[in-house]
Length: 365
Image (cartoon, rainbow, N blue to C red; front, side, top):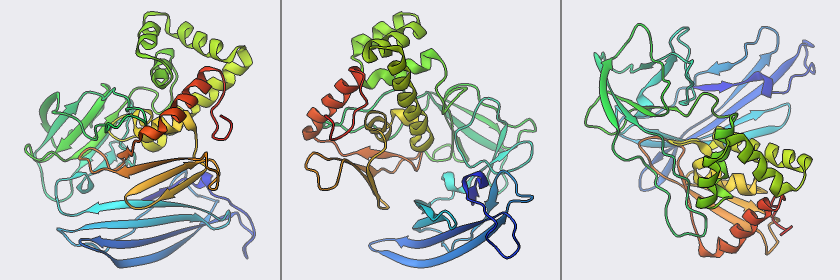
């Protein structure tokens, strides 16, 4: 299933009918995974979208040619033809299991529309739908939020890619007339098998997520800039006063402090939007790098890794980070940073730059 927000597309009247129209193109290639990667299917679909009468969301289905018991990789390119921009994604299709998350759908309880984002808010009422057979009950496994932050890039330690044992387990009716509502932070895994560790994963990270709006929420991402003792001291003070004082002391004046706050917490928002897995996006390896270094100059993606480059390609001072995709029963969006002791001085420079009231830019250090 594909969902596109028309507001993100370019509409113009350069067509025979003279009506406002966008041109959406979706291209995909499917590969069967085994000892080698075999191309088994490809297609290009075109969608001319008339602005008149168009809903806030455009949703369509694409049927893929897959077989039970096999794994696939699907490369998808979604293109705005008029704007000449495109987004490339790699999707894993795992048909070796009939109980993993790809066998479920999450539906809005009120209007039965599909919910694409596994991150819900406390106002959302939803149903977990398993179409393969009739069920009586679901097993719900609850995991407390993983509040750990990643190790810094220079420490040769791997950030955990999975959660430990569930904190609680219970049984619920498969189809509740009142739907499901979540208001306690954590990871909820809805499963049809009490012994299998996979299922439909739903995340709740707080009322305003992915945004950061309260002073208490603003303290947490400062963990990348502060020592443990400084963080502990912040939590002992008035939260708003502590945050304001940190940024004011770093910047030296109010206007500069406001600019630093705007940039840093916008990065938190975008990290949450793009990198959320079974933990908040800013707490992931990619989120850590994004907060401190910002958007990379160059981004290179393959089915198994992402390479972020900061600085010009031919500049010896450029910094490169490599993130490798990790299999996890809780999310398909888990990536682990390849750490190196060589990154130590550049990390220290970047943190020092922020603490001195400057946004770190590779080449300006």
